[in-house]
Length: 292
Image (cartoon, rainbow, N blue to C red):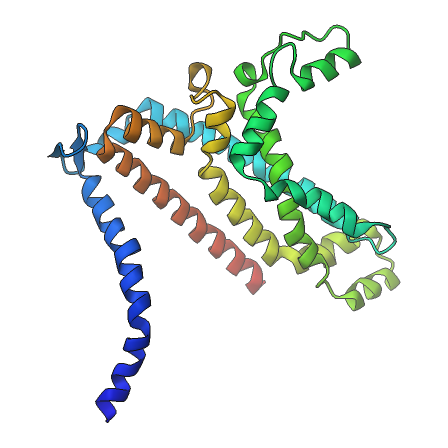
């Protein structure tokens, strides 16, 4: 009887363990094994050990892709998140009329997929007929309508497209955090003579810091995984001089265009290690903040 009861939890966990092992643990093991091989197409592989990882450390294209990805990530963090926070502060104001309507308007872009956003923004940045060049030329006659955004300022174009899609999504998280800020603390700070900025810095910001940390981590992980947006906006390629090449795009090119799935798997593992390291650092920083 006791043995039957001790086996009961494992029986309930068995479906999850089976699915998790089949679709997560086993593919991870296989991808690690594949990262130790050099492939020349389906069914052709040669064991190379850690050579893929050693070559990756000196691969200029990988570091080019890493630099581009970092620039996009920093742009997302220092432009997208402040915009999302400002929108949340604005739409959280109790005297603003039509708050529900504006929240829907700003959140709606996040409901569409990245391929749609890429297809929508690609014509905006076109030369001559692109909406952005037309507007700038009408505002300033000296603006060159032949200016190619997706050739000269690739990362700026990608950051603007991502801003349109994700600012409203992050705004919702900030709104949820702002609505949980203690009104008593805000009123007490106001009574003590604190102005709007002081109340934000010393009351609101510490209260929403856990959610802000969570949003930052999501943004970093999402930015490091950028692929569809740049791939489609740049006509299925990395753009001139590989200025739009990202880590995941390089992984795709290596694995599915070059055919070296082993090296692509090594790139994937390095990307995973990067994200795990960033997550651990962010967790450590948030823990220190909570202990203060």
